[in-house]
Every structure is written in C-alpha cells, then in structure tokens.
Amino acid sequence: MNTTPATKRPICSNCNRPVRNCICALISTITNEVEILILQHPDEAPNAKNTAGLLHLSLKSSQLKIGEHFVTQDLDSWLFADQKQPLLLYPEIPEYQALGLGAPRTLPSLNLMAPNQLRLVVIDATWRKSRKMLYLNRTLQILPRMMLTETPPSIYKIRKAHSENQLSTLEASCYALQQLEQQQVDYAPLLSAMRLFVAQQSAFVPMLHDQNDLSNPFAPDERNPNL
Image (cartoon, rainbow, N blue to C red; front, side):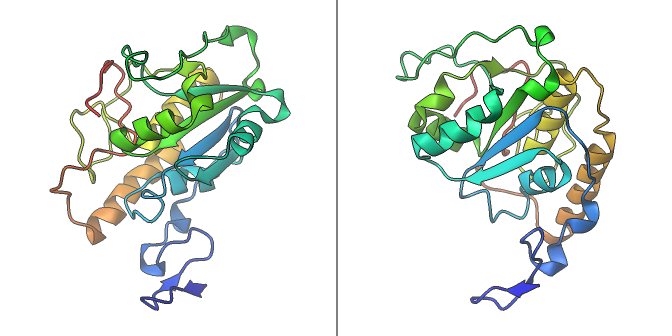
C-alpha cells in the first residue's frame, strides 16, 4: 500500500486507486485470445470513473500505455510486436481527408486469421481527445478499422453520454473481443463486474453535470460523432 504526498490517502499498489475506491475485488480474470492494447489519454488515468483500469487488470493478454503523442518507434513496437495484425476500434471518419488524416488500410479477412494473430487497439479518451490522439499519431490513422454493430444499451451510467448506444471503454472492448473471437470466450463475468463498478462509483462520485463526453462512446450507428 502506498500514500499520495498531497493527500496522504492510502493508495492500492495494484489498481493505483485510493483504498476506499479500490477495484481489486471486482477483477474478473479472463484469458482473452485477441490481445488488447489500450492507449489511454493522461487525463483519463486519474479519473475514478474510468473503466480501462478494470479492463486491463481483468484481461490476461493486455497492455495499457498512457500518453497523447507517442514516440513513433515506441508506438510501432507496441502495435506490431510478434507480427500480430493491429486493428483500431474506432468509428469511420468520412471527412478524414479534409482533416488531414491518413486513409485507414483495408480491413483484412479476419475469418482467415486466428484470434491470437490479432491485436485490438483501443483509444481510451473522450471523443475530442481521442480525435486529437489520432491526429498526433499517424500510425494510428492508417490502421485497419474495426467498428461495432448491434451492441446492447450501455450499463455505464456515471458519465455523460449522448445516446444509450454509447459505450464505455470496457464495454466496447468486450463486445469487440467477442466479435473477433467468435464468442469463444465468455466476457459476461467482466460485464457483471462492470455493473458492480458502476454501483461502487455511484456511491462516491455524483453524476456529471459538465460537458465532458463519455469515455470512448463507441456508437455502432454513429458515423460522424460530434467531436
């Protein structure tokens, strides 16, 4: 157990949260077949309502890197390690050329690839900041894109969203992994843990009344998110 110099609050050494807000009891260890790389904006790391930490601690095959503008060599080493095919979980951006973004490469034939040959890349940030991260990191711009379809309503009720289909990072990642792994891995325990996480955070943090968007609100039918 550690303490923060400014507040002297005891900090859990495993989840890096204040002990009273520790999420270790919610960790549901899952052996995912598709590796996941979470690229987290620095503003999300200390946010108590952020779900990426629980996701990372629960998945055996996962990496979490914090930053906004990554060193290209570092980013490439994370994305292409072990000759895996990276897929960026992100909606289509029809106006990418007008925004000065590179064109995403064509999505490979996923039915011809084993799940352990894939790496799911998730940007953990608000919409506006995720767009900035995309703009600052050209390698991310040109990765093949994966988009979600027909997802259930979000259970993440502690951050502001613009529709019931906008999902947290944890939810979006679970549904994407299920799709890539063809339902071979059960993510229900992690989604159940997410419900407990929402209940836990609701007891400590009031509902947002500001203009911050839901972190990673992956909306299956939203092709032009208002970032």
